[in-house]
Length: 513
Image (cartoon, rainbow, N blue to C red):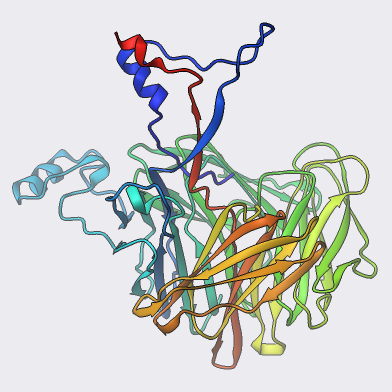
């Protein structure tokens, strides 16, 4: 679901607080005029959480924060990320610890925080990325908020490089909005995989979470997956293999929150194929787009789960640069209700970028999906994941891009679209630049990524839909790591930086007289 937390003040609501009355008229038999069209205003507050990046002492992590410039925002505001960390003794009910901190001049707050807590990262101005680095295995989960001019479209990327060991390679994940339900097709409990569900609670009270696992034959028997408590302002990694004794290659993870809310991501680490973060799939629906499979992928595995009791029959299409094609031998996929299905598409890309498009063969049945992508050969293989995603919509952003090693893929599955791509100023210098592109219906295009003039540091890419569509997009980061073709892929969903606020049909100021 991953809905960005929105906070805004509507004029009608404020008037109601003053007068005790507010009304929006609607059409009736007498022909009364309808309410005016809703006005779109920038969101005023956004929350994000980032999982703990790695348990490896060799990990090197970069956090990058960026907010695109949005018209109509307040002139002030801030955006910052704080360490979630572990609860202090005060938060756990140790009054003496609280008193001791207060006696040392540190004012204790809710959730065990004190005035001595300092942000890990603080944004400087919209339109320019800010980065912070962290090393080793001690980096905690982070919680953050942005308000005012920093809230609309606030995007944070966590990129980690692990030089050796299980999960070695490049691991990237977008920090996400807290929510109450998540689906992760593509996880595993196989012996060669070490997969964690990372749960991060940004709030002042504990969250209670259930984790369900579904394999090829249905629900897996779990022992401690129900009623998991995530303490306030804390992160909790849950190793999947501790939840069940069953070993399966393809597992769907369902995270549901009984009380409170959390951010959730799956870290999938392979003994031989490296590892990456598996972001949540879009909510269950009948048609899905999995955007931006790299052109040099050597293996592609599609994993699909049907949450209900009904079976799903899906058409499988690959939107390539020249048009929509059917993968040979995998024209359709049958998914039994409540079971996880997987199909290996092999070297389906054949040197061209593409996106998988799943549509109902007959009647629509809600499903979730993700693909596991492998690049390289032999001991130099690396893995990344692409979940089914939301459309770009009005605007979407990917951060932590470099002058070399950044790819942007855009697909228009059903109608030709024109898009605008803006490369922001660099984190250490450079000027923004924009380009427009046309993406033909049924195709995926790996567009020529604009690079800021005089770039120093990293930059953000913002994609806007100008006309047509819908369009879906993903960004791939690549690097060389001791001969390994390291890479990570992040989708670009609508940033939901604007919210529709209805306007009153009539002048209600007379009600104040």
